[in-house]
Each structure stands twice: as C-alpha cells, then as structure tokens.
Length: 268
Image (cartoon, rainbow, N blue to C red):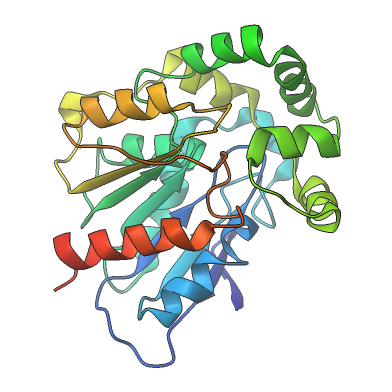
C-alpha cells in the first residue's frame, strides 16, 4: 500500500502487479472517517482484480490538509478535492463513494463526467432530513452521539458498532475504528441536509450502480431505493449488512457485485 500526496491531499494507492484494466478506481469516504476505511479490504482486492486503486482523504480528514479548518469546508470543497485528484490521474477514474462520499460523487457529476459511478449506502439526492428523522425516532441515542462527534467528542465503542455494523466485529477492530474516527464539518452536514442538494438535471449521465445495506440505520433501504429511483436504476441491497459495507465481515460479497457490474457495463 502506497501513501502519497496529491498536493496537500492524502491519497492511499494500490496498483496491480500486472496492469489489466485501463480505467482506475477512485474511492471517496464518508463522514467522520478518511481514506483508511478502504485500505483493509477494497483497495488490495480490486488491485488484485487488475485495477489501479486510489482512495482520497478529503480536506480536514486523515492526513490531508488543515484539520483546524474542518468546519469551514463545504461539500463543494470536497468536490474540488475529488476534481484535484481526478486531474492528477493518468486516466479518468470510476468514482466509488460511500455515504457522504456518494453525495460528493453526485455533486461532482454536476460539473464533471466520469466513466461510471458506484454509490454505496449513499446520502440520497433528497438529502439527510429523512435519515435524521428516522434516527430521532428509532435510534435517538445514536443520533445524540453523532451530534457529539460533530463537536469533537470521541465516539463510544457501542455507537461505532451500532452505526456501522450489523455482522459480528471483534472488540479490537472496533477500538481501532473509534481511534481513527474524527469530527465532521458542520457546514458539510448542513449542505447535505438542506443547502446544497444535487441538481439531478445538471448531472452527467453516467452508468451508475446503487448499493445499500438491509440493516443500515443511517441510510436505510428506503433511502437507497429513493436514490436508485431518482437515477432510473435498480438498487442492490445486501440484507445482512450494516452501513460500513466495505468493513463488514462479508465485504467481499459487495466487492464481487461491484466487479461483476464493472465487467459487464464498463470494462471490456
């Protein structure tokens, strides 16, 4: 695994030993996390499948620029981060966004194009209101903990388990994820809630795969279905998984589904 810098942005790269695919993959993380969430499974797995893989830490995340300015960053700033990395790559990448990262991919497509896009448990184009209301009634303690994290509080192990996982996960991994978690930009959260929702009519028409998890408390299946309906595609749900589909015990089911779609729709 190679950690490099694209300007002031951290990018974790994994390249195949023998290049098979012409089109690289660029992974965009969700809120409260960074590029590390792709490192354990997806980057090496897709590199073994022949893809040059890159995962960016958005501004204020991971080892990217200016953590002290986190709350000043908007979704548009995150879109500019993605555009900065895309411009530095030798070929235009397929974009894979998880949760907030899926929202950033949607906003990116308003002003740019891509060979394809994969939205994993993505914030829907209608925004976060429905998710927040659902948490308020069904998981109020989790919503309170997420709000405390916005203010810089460390997450509890129980909150990380409830927010990200449905399948069993060992205590050591949970502690690791707690330590790696971080606050999120208030401005970006408000952008996704109300102030900067995607203009679907302006977006580039690209092949799109919409994936979700059947036991996701943050982006439940109904919101995944709403995203898929908006873009005129059929969603694929992994019934026995939680929000962190790339870290769940059965993550390879998700990766295999993505690869099959890429091979039939994009990669010849």
